[in-house]
Length: 77
Image (tube, rainbow, N blue to C red):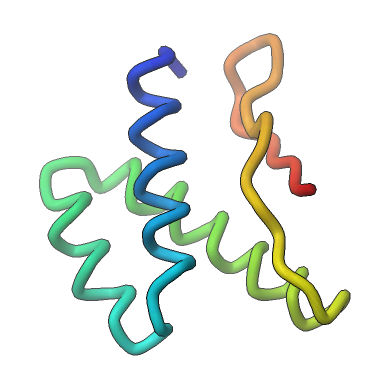
């Protein structure tokens, strides 16, 4: 994943998780309208973030989700 792609993913993800859940789908439909692959990645990250919040009672923030081979791996702080 290139730096501009990573930055776009991170920006959209962080905006999406800051919205109330009922507003997320409409936001993501608009933000990812021409990139269904990006939408799938962000949906997966939001699911993981939600599960983390349930498990820990806290919030996760996206960091270092791409490994050295450019694979989406996920890491939260």
